[in-house]
Length: 257
Image 1 (cartoon, rainbow, N blue to C red):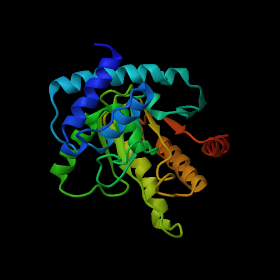
Image 2 (cartoon, rainbow, N blue to C red):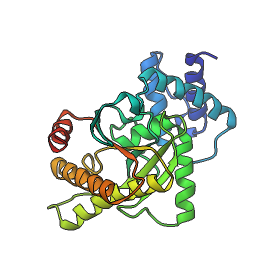
Image 3 (cartoon, helix red, strand yellow):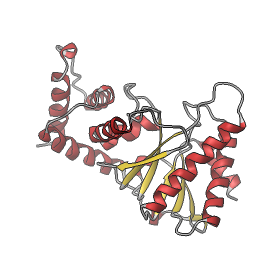
């Protein structure tokens, strides 16, 4: 089966699941088809799926992820012992764990092709990530509290695990409590990585996107929390501060010297 065949199969499977998509116009262009598949995956509820679908989806996504180019931690240069700064797409990192800035439902972003990191991670991991998250949340019986963390398999991503954490959402003036909760996100992720004996963990800029936490203050909290944890706790994993925007890179570059 070619990549084109896999793409057609996956689109047909997902459109046939829903009666409201009957007669949907399927684009002929491959780039547009890829966008359509991602959209269909984004809006799909966490429901059972066939083994054949998973097999073909996994083959397709692993090919896409190879096409994007994997980046190993060994390729990075530390800014100081055990700490790295890397600018790029976090889903390319072959780290032991990458951190996802999740929402309290922990099911990923349902907006088609949205640019948030939650959407990107779920899109390139595959539908299994949402399915596992849904099962965990069902057992938990309530929304995920802000500042906690959960470790989940990464499926088709080059990393081993995705650590999901819910950061504080800023709706008015920044409060001391917001800063404490953001620090808790970082320490909770580090503790989870340490417990599972992970060698390294890559942090995104938690809460600074859709959750509107001020970039510089968030970076200051991130760096301070990570450095304190590494000083105080034995067996702390190496940390990669992953940034996407040039503005975030400049801030972290300054803070890390």
